[in-house]
Amino acid sequence: MLKKSIISTIIVSSFFLFSQATLAQKQTYKPAGSSFVTVTGTSTIHDWEMRSEDVAGEAVFNTSDTGSPQSLESVMFRLNKTTLKSDKSGLDKRAYEALNSKRHPEIIFRTNGSNNIR
Image (cartoon, rainbow, N blue to C red; front, side):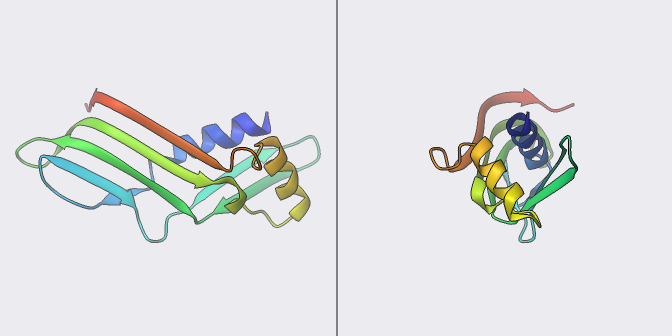
C-alpha cells in the first residue's frame, strides 16, 4: 500500500511542477528552481511525510499560432527514490525497502501521445 501511495502521489504531483521554458509551435515546461515533491500517507501507527527537492522532468505541448497549448505531446518525470526524506530515518529505511530502491533506484514516468486540452 505504501508503494502504490508514493508512486501515485508523485505522478499526480509531477504535473503541477512545471514552469514555462520556451514559446514556439511546441512549448516545453520544466521544473522550476525550487520544485519539490512531497509524499504523505498514514499507517496504523501514525501519519507520515517525505520530501525531495531532487526532481527532474519535462512536459511538451503542441501550441497554436498564438502560443496557447492545444495538445500534450509528452511528459517525463524522474525522481531518485532515496532522495525522499522524512524526519525519521526508520521510516525512510522502510519506505526505501517497500519501493525496492536498491534494485530500482528511480521512479520514472513517461508518456507520449496527443491529448487535446479543453
